[in-house]
Image (cartoon, rainbow, N blue to C red; front, side, top):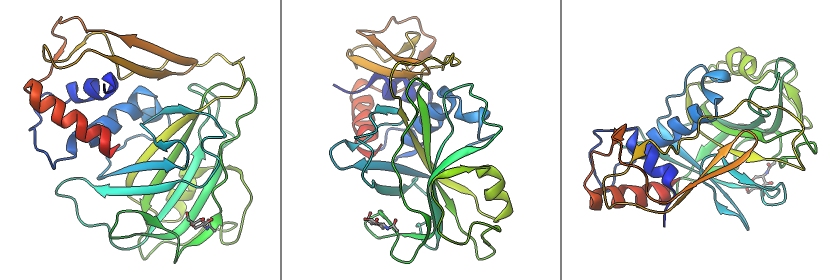
Length: 275
Ligand SMILES: *[C@@H]1O[C@H](CO)[C@@H](O)[C@H](O)[C@H]1NC(C)=O
């Protein structure tokens, strides 16, 4: 059984070649998830990742994009794995990694987003994991902690290339507690970029009392897997909770997978494994 959201994501890429080692499909899937959760264009104007970033938490395992987790599950430091998109350059040099809480969909974040992690100068090892061995950690990873009733918060983990011209802005050179900031201004002021890869999770505490804007789930009943490829249960995370669509999808041809059933399964398996 695999998530229909992945199949749906794949369906958004109609003419993708089915190659066992090609993770371009998974890159398209994360782009679709960011749009579905309105991170793009509400927060990032654009998002064109050149690598896949996956989060693995002890006890919670490797998370799928936007996965709803409890604050307990994501309290310990994650292991972050970054794999270049096929054809992408090797991940040498220095990077900055950050986690920011951009709140529920439609929230007023003009007062800033909450920084839960900020490390400059991280590297990516030959095993694709992010290492802080040579890093300057400004804010050590501090797990999500949304206020009760404040909706489903989107926590973005983002990896930026850190060029030689990087210079930490005033006020960001020494250790800082978790606090609000203008993250996008920081990126611009410090010369960070491009945004190489990112992922996100949803954490909610208590029953929401906010009126979040509905998200466009990547899963849609109008998406039609190639006949015979998939029946199953997909979970999509909405702003106010989890909506589930299950069963075979109507074959109304809105999007058609251009993959053979076997190829689709192979690619879905790969996607599942690498996200
Ligand atoms: C560096 O990474 C290790 C392994 O994830 C972690 O245990 C440690 O807390 C990190 N150090 C800082 C300062 O974030």
